[in-house]
Image (tube, rainbow, N blue to C red; front, top):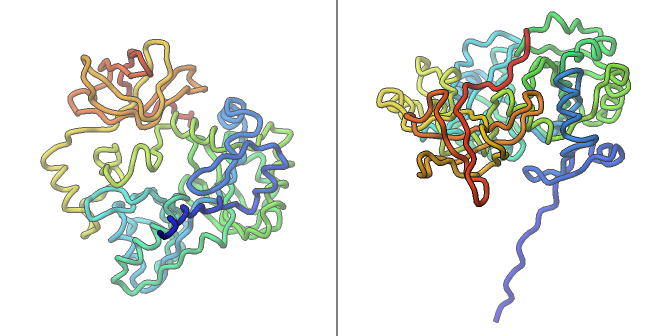
Length: 372
């Protein structure tokens, strides 16, 4: 009798700053196949640092895909739902990488370097799958390259970010508009400096050669010490994005959800030429939605968690996609898909929390919006 082969256990992947995180006392957890810090000094402290001062995140597990060539724009247009033809040089655009079914293969940021060169930022767990998906649909004069291993990505987020980073670079940071980028040196290292982020705060994301990772990380930490900057993990990144009502792949969006259902119609340009899933989304727009993503706040004691059932008049009507405490607001919040009849703000629902239910109320999103 042949021996049953044991399951293949793939070792967790590490960013170039893995040893630094461990030396700083980061609590490491598996995330999307990566060994990443979930917290250093505590999720609450790190969350507040970003809202009030600044935080530094290692997000090098994210993926970067380069598309170049005479028909690079045509390929980007075909696989994404937003209209990349509207991009100016050095501009970024939030978009969806679509399936033929009109659902999300991933969400991503499209960056325009030139008319023949676009750069996509994709989620960590999806980066190889996204690359293969784009290559599968590359029927254009365009070259697709997964360049993820060539970059460290750091995010500096919070109201003190410009004050902290400006002395480290000759690039004038304040004139860079939201969702725009430039290329210049920071701490003597050539970087892509992008005014983007995933926290609901002002900030920058920096992309550079991994060999400079510790130098840049330590330089930013040192420069930010007086301003109260903290190293931050994935825990605070999640609570911050949730307060800001930002979708997380695998939770609010996936291959079963469309942009219209997810409240992302604003990134779905049905007026542009054909793209993957366009006909499906057009039919959904014409026929109307049966469900939509909503935000809720707990009215009774209890903390909703991802995956908990949502009830209305005793009947299960949905499932929580993301939930937990909102430190900035001092309330417990969450998101869920509900039938459209139950989506108006003020609608009362119940969350199944283990063996009991707790009352919640549908509220508008985002839960938190920073002051301009």
